[in-house]
Image (cartoon, rainbow, N blue to C red; front, side, top):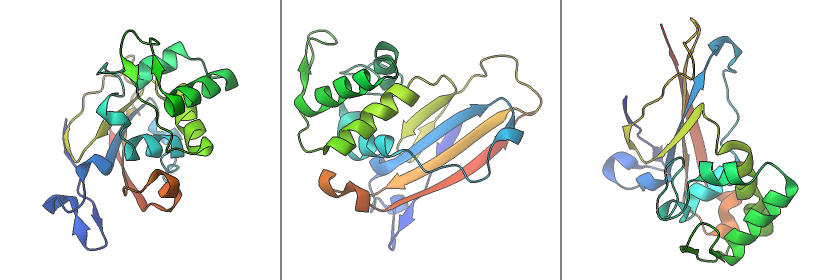
Length: 186
């Protein structure tokens, strides 16, 4: 399904390329039962916002391998544990070599310990969820397949969020907004 998202903030818009489209995230969630979906979903997790604000997407994709492993593959290798969060935080801060083959990950010392933990926490808890896909940018297409025969009340929850670029040390003050749309299946 094709999509297009327009963000307006402080008199500027993605429509006229005044706001970078790389700061827009579309989250598509398959819901087996839409009656259990809350009307006002929680905001995008801090760790995911940090990933979108950073240059992580230059080497990593959400589900597909790029120059580096996908976030989903990382989540599958590192179980949801404090040890995994600490390991991934260290890899992000200090960089790594030989963990995923011969490719090296450069260090990212600009992030605070809280930012590192938030990114690692999002990866181990959420990156491998088969019912959720993520897309960066204002235009594109998404494809989702129900994991089983869809129930009568199944559908998709689309959440578009925007986070303004900000230096890593000031990311908590970055502008943020989101909008959600629910698509009911038949």
